[in-house]
Length: 322
Ligand SMILES: NC(=O)c1ccc[n+]([C@@H]2O[C@H](COP(=O)([O-])OP(=O)(O)OC[C@H]3O[C@@H](n4cnc5c(N)ncnc54)[C@H](O)[C@@H]3O)[C@@H](O)[C@H]2O)c1
Image (cartoon, rainbow, N blue to C red; front, side):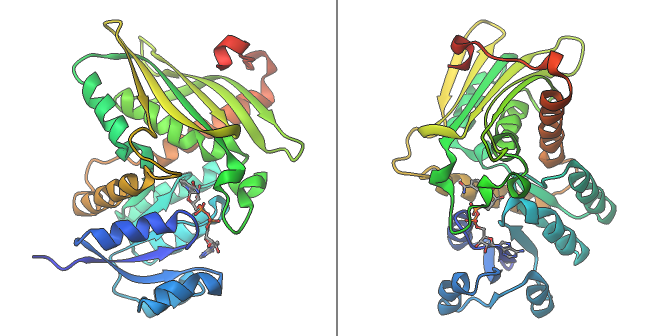
């Protein structure tokens, strides 16, 4: 049996616990070290015998035999951390969005390609059991249309630090933060087709944070297929679902949260899926195109359309917004 891969986890907030549990459950990996800027976050791992560091540079200096790193910090910190980890020669699994700036996402993708290093963006819904069932049910019939709804009250998802509510730190709001997951689902269901945003309506609050968005996308090529992504950060509760219309007229629906009782309960199995896929990508990197940059491209296009070209701005009717 090959030795387990030694991983470092950078950032120990809300989402880190799903990674830590996935690593614990998977004999192919071992947790070698953790890092957080907050000393208090290091107490539990240190008590369990895991070396904890206050900065990623200190971590890298102390652990020269790592096989990979997981970045699960606020969105605006992804790019700088990924750059340093790639510079250290490590395969990186980074939370979505890959970066808050498209130029950073491009630069990171280029560095990873130049150095033949894995840069893996963690789109957890790709590994959701309902999504996998839906994708299997679609197999063999072309997908004509996709609709993804991603509704939540963002305040329910905030940990110690309210960075999600700061447009500069989260990247803008629901489009920057939840958009990538929704776009990636559309890409998955359309067989990884290239997409573009054709209409965008984004509603912001007084702080400039986008709270709702209705986005229309089309696939590239001669017979464009359409997708609708609806996002809401002011929704009381949580609703995450996908509707697929197949070319033969069948309509299939999938509730991403079904079958998992409790807040964020589906994330346990989704993050086990991420870890397995990250390991498989380290093992066989050839041919895989990470969706992190493609998702950022769509985020940037949505903001550009909404901001610069009012003639393209799509205001959904009440019926369309439902
Ligand atoms: N919360 C969710 O529901 C959710 C779901 C999917 C993905 N994500 C993504 O996961 C990432 C983390 O989100 P979260 O909700 O866990 O955030 P969080 O605020 O709960 O945790 C972030 C942690 O990172 C630490 N940190 C900040 N800067 C750091 C740095 N430079 N080095 C080391 N540690 C640092 C913070 O001290 C904090 O403990 C984000 O990119 C987010 O978009 C979150």
